[in-house]
Amino acid sequence: MTANRRFRLALDILMTLLLPFLMAYSLIGEVFHEVVGTTIFVLFIIHHILNRRWYGALFKGRYNALRVFRTVLDTLLLVFMVLQPISGILMSKHLYTFLPYFSISAQARSIHMLLAYWGYVLMCLHAGTHMTNLFPKLGKQKRGIRVLVRSLIFAISGYGCYAFVKRGVPGYMSGRTIFAYFDYSEPVMLFMLDYLAIMVLFMTTGCLISFGLAKVD
Image (cartoon, rainbow, N blue to C red; front, top):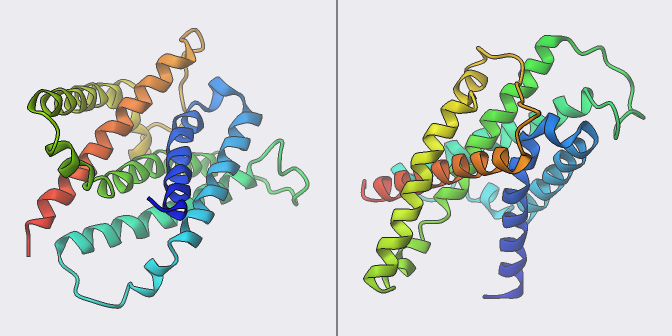
């Protein structure tokens, strides 16, 4: 693996690992939330600079089912990941107080929360579409290891389905729930583990969709 490839991988891993912290808004404090959000946005910009050839290739070549899916997914993710930090900056109480003040309504805050949960799911799906190359490598391992790893992935994904509902994510994504609820008596680690399980769920989903669409000409 080249140094450039290692750097890209490290950047993507760091951005992914920071995501659950961003979702723990009230549990980690507003200042840390803004720091994490800013960090992820900067990493996202660097990610796009490193992958700028994607833009030049948009109107080249043939579009099969997998490419259409990836392009639509990546475009939606780009829109969400730009609008989310912008709405967050407009509501900032700490890092961006030097900017002109804007009177933000409760509706605008709901929009920011909507963008946050959709952005989380879309980013996990996006990551999953780029993990398909791991399964051929897994196929070369001993049968016991293959069974163990696959069982672990699907077990975590199964719990991720439960955590997805338990944490009320469908309500946030549909806009039915306009306030984020946190149990302050709950250890932050348990909250993080639930969102990591949700992450594994959607990464697995993105990977499986990619495998399925790859078979469609």
